[in-house]
Length: 162
Image (cartoon, rainbow, N blue to C red):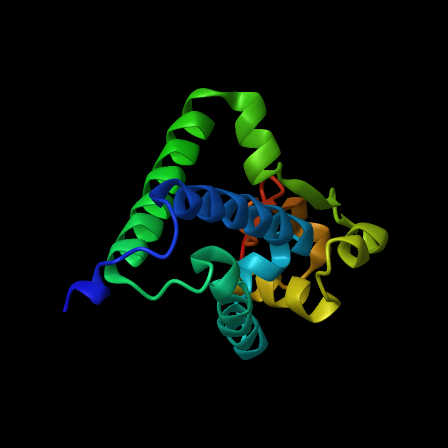
């Protein structure tokens, strides 16, 4: 029974591994782009499961003890909390971690090169228009790809949305 709680390495190895994997995963998620995060598909779910499996040994170092799991889980939760607190209090850090909104369209003009760079398909953009009850792109004053991957649309003044 005691082997369930017996660590295979010093406790701080687990903390260090959790921190390194957390930072690595944050960087990978940020590099994947805003739209990918906001539009979670079946493929994204499979990717998350596979990534979890891929980093498992890197984070636990082969340790299967309950103590090791508790240390790693606690480290990840605390680390996530600290990042949330730090980004809420520090605007430059928030921009670094979360990114900034990106203008996709302005004054009825869609920026196709920005859509491509941000991995937003024309179909996804048209869907955002429909969700906002906008039939004509000329009615769009501003369309933003938010940091959470969602597309926000502001209509021009005086436009009756259908």
